[in-house]
Image (cartoon, rainbow, N blue to C red; front, side, top):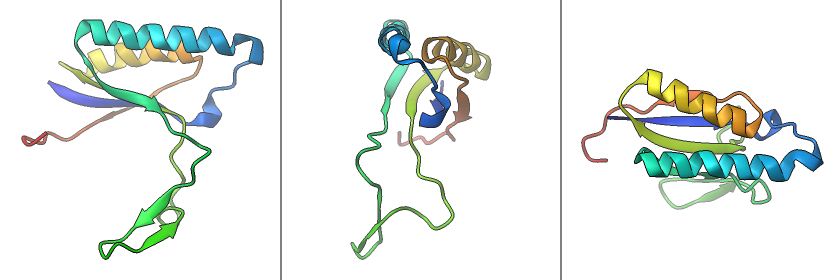
Length: 113
């Protein structure tokens, strides 16, 4: 089984205010479906109200992130699935629930994880 990151940037989700509660309900329903299917590993949205920091090996903390790198935001789900095709199917379900396209990335195999 391979772990997949299914995500979208915050600015991709453009939903009228009156539809937002339905988006929340629909997205939670997809996550519950993933949990029931035994494929859910982790998920959530980045708290955009808290600024990112960069921590160096010596413990130095710097505001922001790597130079030239955009700050990650939006929503993320990590699912453990048998195939890329399955990841694309789950991404489609999440896209419908969130009303925006989803990016799919595959994690490299790590025997320690």
